[in-house]
Length: 145
Image (cartoon, rainbow, N blue to C red):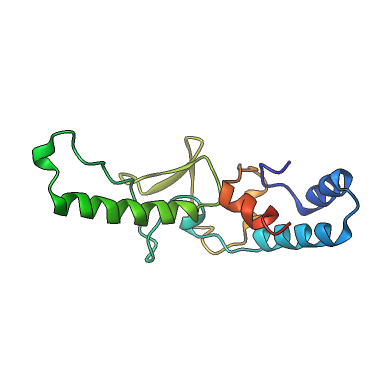
């Protein structure tokens, strides 16, 4: 169950049954999961965004033609890919994509209307679809144990 968002009660039961009896580790685990559930939703939980919540597309790599790969172009690409990768590391849930043409967030190819849930708590919105965690979300829950 460590790959998907589930109700807190299910998480407590599953993790307690799997535990080796280390109560301190369980307390930390439960606390971390509760903190994740109580985070307000932002667009950055679903797709990579910059500091102003603008959606970031993965930068195009340098061209295969050496004449087009100026030092300035390669420097810009390296800077852009570093920003994109950092933003991608902040995404918490897999399976979401953005369509610029319709300004719509999709979950597994179905529209997911972020506008009406922006700022709502993760547990209030996402438990019914049980999205898969990214490694970042898993690290938030399991990383301190």
